[in-house]
Amino acid sequence: MNIAKKLVFGSPAYQKTSQKGGFLIERGLFGNSSPASQSSGFWCEAISSKINRWAPLFIALLVFVALLLPFASASADSGRYLVKSTKGFWKNAFGVRHAFGNGFSTDLSDFQVRLAKMFGIAVEPVTALQILPEDTIGSPPPSSGATSVPEPTIIPTETPTETPAVKAKAAKPGPFRFVPSDQTPWGLEVIYNDPDLVFSSGGAGVNVAILDTGVYSEHPDLTRRISQCKDFTNPRTPVIDGKCEDKNGHGTHVAGIIAADAGVDGRGIYGVAPRVSLFTYKVCGNNGLCYADDIAAALRLAVDQGANIVNMSFGSDQESNLIKGAIDYAVSKGVLTVAAAGNDGPFEDSIDYPGASQAVIAVGAINQPLTVTDWSSRGINSITEPWIVEHRDIEFAAPGEYVESTWNNGGYVILSGTSMASPFVAGLAAKYWQSTADDSMMATRDFLHSLATDLFPFGDDDASGFGLPSVK
Ligand SMILES: [Ca+2]
Ligand SMILES: [Ca+2]
Ligand SMILES: [Ca+2]
Image 1 (tube, rainbow, N blue to C red):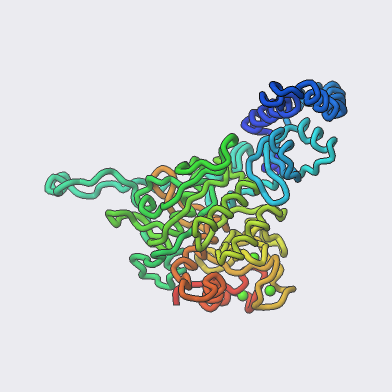
Image 2: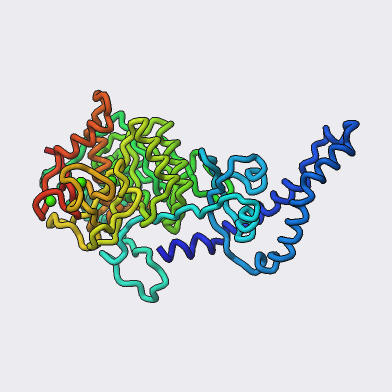
């Protein structure tokens, strides 16, 4: 998580915002006299009472500015914080990104953090989470160690095999498009329990929210599936509707595993539930970092917009109270949440949040021989009640190594990670969504348990929980 911290506090975009916040402080303290109070007969009284009220703050602020300005200007540190105050004054001073029950999130400089603390306002850093492709599998080791982003394996474009004579006879050679190396990759065959699978089906009428790096909405295999697209990562605007451009590729890959429908021409790749409607909410930046306040706001909005299932292919060692609150909200509205277990295995209790939460289905990664990978995070199933899902238990394992899916150039890549395993289970939940049950969420979760095949070692183990769920 070192990379995360470095990027959170060193990003130029956030410095910019915090400077704006600094300007707002001044306006808040010195620019609040409204024209009405100035024109009234009590002008002097109003101003003097204002001065009386603000004088101690004003002096203290001057002292602080004098003391801290050299440090503040020398410091490049700024980051995302939760300000634990619901007072309008602090909201005006710092600017509100997302409002929550106990406060609001915003970007603050070190100086602003010290200022808030001086006035007795509790301020805590917002947890940063990371998307979970596994970067040591399926890609060459980084040459300089400077990057941890995996090199995607681009599947080569289809080379025309027809002879010129045959080609000339073709009525109309459709527009250029990439094609996958396999329309029904090994993971899909495993989930469908059918090595001869030629297409997938299901998911009609089910809304699946994907909280990720966005999506390439022009991908021919995804474009008909996307019903909502929102961006929660813009440093200046908390939510932008109709925008979710995926400059990373991760979100497009995850979307394909759940929902790819092979396109109008039927030549593309298939996902698990190719008739679902997707809410693609961009909560992770192009560098793969995702702030907990953006995730919490997106999850709450997805619930309000009618999502049935939410996939979260990201994680952190730390539990975020903001995300926990949003998960509780999802549970209260009957929304099923699914998340990647993490790529920190094979150590016991290496599971990441939010998957580690009891309410969230945590999914580990298996390879083609149906063995859990070393790097897939482990839970504590062996020391909790067997076949009962508890805090920090792994719930399922699903295909997560060498997974072929859609990419943000309109093509396909092969990636590994628990990021890829989670959407297989989210897709299967969509295919088997128990819409007529009293509690659709619990009925679907129970049904997935009933579909699971136990994996080695015998029983509810730390690596795979109930095992591999698949079409029976
Ligand atoms: Ca869990
Ligand atoms: Ca258990
Ligand atoms: Ca087992």
